[in-house]
Length: 259
Ligand code: ATP
Ligand code: MG
Image 1 (cartoon, rainbow, N blue to C red):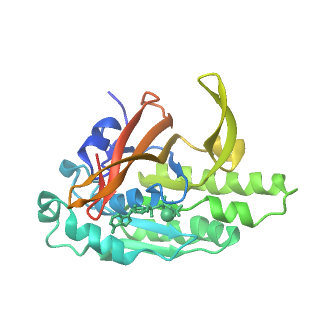
Image 2: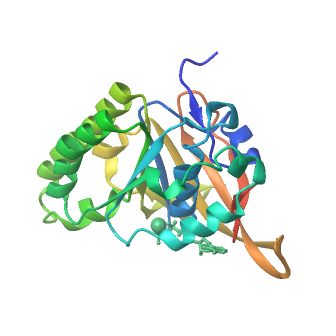
């Protein structure tokens, strides 16, 4: 039996696939191209983390660090309203928004400040069980000169190291969203462009579990609007300590991420 807890992603099929959800262990990365569903999954976990353990949560709040877009509060509200009643019943006395601490960060230096100074304070004062960095990629791709790989690697190590430390000290789930770059790879003996998580080896070495999302060309009827269709997406385990490298389908609707 594994030693660490898991946080439900708020979808029973994906939870089964991930053996209970995202591990409370090190850094879980969610990589994928724009629109693949990374933010949707993170928003959903900012809700599930607040559920009691019996519902797959961790009975705590979330810190959501936004580096690219403004925090999508309207979408969060919509997700909350659509969540299965058993989940909302468990929390009827709680205002979900009150337990989500939002940080807007514009550069690597501010991210370091946030992780090294503000977060340790907040985490001692409030019961927070999830930290999301959405995303780690933008800052690190824009803040350095092309030749400055050394400083970038150093900063990635500071950020990754501090996230590991906080995860362990406060027993929390840490999720970092990452972009992808297309790299030539071999599939069925043919060379193809394949999306690979950005930021190279310096960052990959900090990641405990790497999940990758992607949209496929297939569509299915939208369960909420049968005259509309939604695209089928895949969640792939690229590497993870306790999971086989496998993938699983899901869709995103008004009500969130579904298996
Ligand atoms: P980026 O890298 O640009 O931030 P992302 O991977 O974070 O992209 P998400 O915001 O998680 O992308 O997913 C966007 C997709 O989620 C949309 O393309 C849409 O298909 C779906 N989606 C978002 N909101 C809704 C909604 N209210 N109803 C239905 N689908 C939605
Ligand atoms: Mg996003």
